[in-house]
Image (tube, rainbow, N blue to C red; front, side, top):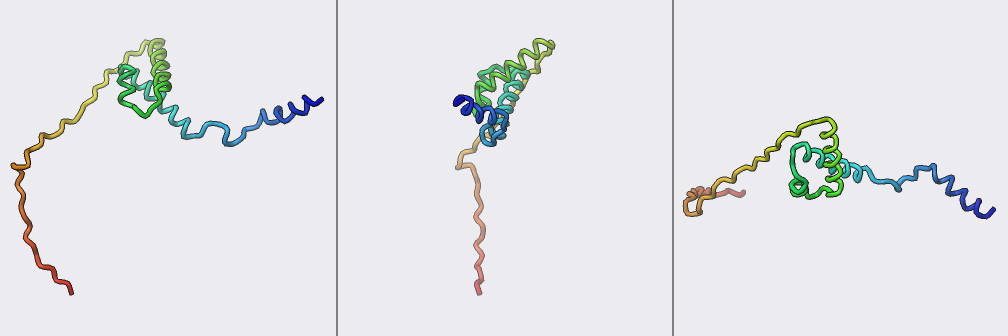
Length: 113
């Protein structure tokens, strides 16, 4: 009888959706984004190490899960990946300070009334 009384509240709470006990929407979004990053890396024919280094804020386990899911999907459907080309902008060559010409502005008197 006593065990039935203890089990009753647990059974009543089992069907409830108590706010604050589940993952937050931001956490779910971060997980989904990390999986999408892994999928995109696999489709772009990137290795996992490259994917990790290009996306340091993403969780490695979730990136791998997305990469693995995309790999399985691509193999099942015989999809070829597309080669990704990352272009880096070249920085302009710095000129030495001695070659930079500066022009002084003429000073104008200020009238303060």
